[in-house]
Image (cartoon, rainbow, N blue to C red):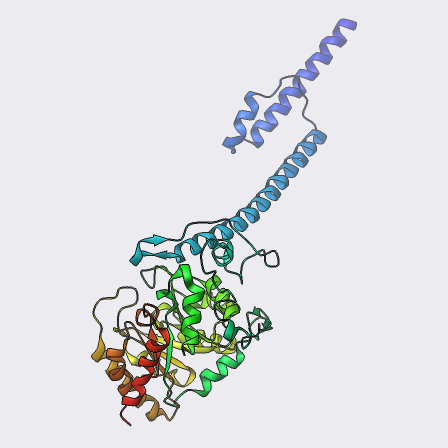
Length: 407
């Protein structure tokens, strides 16, 4: 009897294990990934409901841990990518192909009060701005001691656009732009991209002290415009040094609606965009205006004036390009003059004030007279100002074109 009992018990255990194994093989028959589990399944291991629950709980816990670690790593990598992107962008901004010169990378300095670098010049630019290696230091108070007292540092303000902090108080500058529309006044807007980046502070101070009321920032992304220039950190650094100067920012970028906020926070007063760069030009113009800036539109040599006819009453600046942006080449003077005259006629027909008519692309004293006679009121001059030994005389020569205008 004892032997029979032992045999029966062994047979029952064997039968239960066999039935359990068949059950699991049936459940996972359609799951190829689960098949290897049964090749390594211990023959003597009993599968119970409790063990299944424990296994599922452990699997869920493992999945949760993996997901959590993935999210943390993603956020960390994104942070690092943004900083690296700023460094790379600033490295590219300091390149000066025409002189075959690149600013050497110095020790990176990041202001403790602004670790993100959104409104600062970034790690690389900050090192250049604050390094004593370059003489004279950029934006040094000694560069323009006579004007430093008349340029008090303006505190940041909150704009209506999303409540973002905006560098300096640019509202008075925007009012100056709006009040100057249609008055016939001529201003010179030196192009910052043509300045010597090693002596940027000295060059810009010389231009502003020499009579430049605007500074022109040509932003190029390498797509809308073939070249790459600089970004919002450079604009922000200049804003702190020149709070009373109108910052004229021309966005040569694809989908400028995604970049407007960066330059609003940097302290731009005028933001001009290319009609070809966006699918919703009126919406972009409204976004710029609602943010408290003066909106503008850039007209390339191949762009018709008809692209802005429906919004001419909403813009403060129209930039007429003499050349294709980033390409250089021949100047389309006659086409530009025709567009200047056509824009004035368009505004007269609509009964609206003529916006600032800005010309860009190789403006010099030799062609400024012809452009101002046609009706141009803002002259973007780069090399003719920053390569001059006396910047005040160069700016005065451009402004003197006003004396030759035909009434």
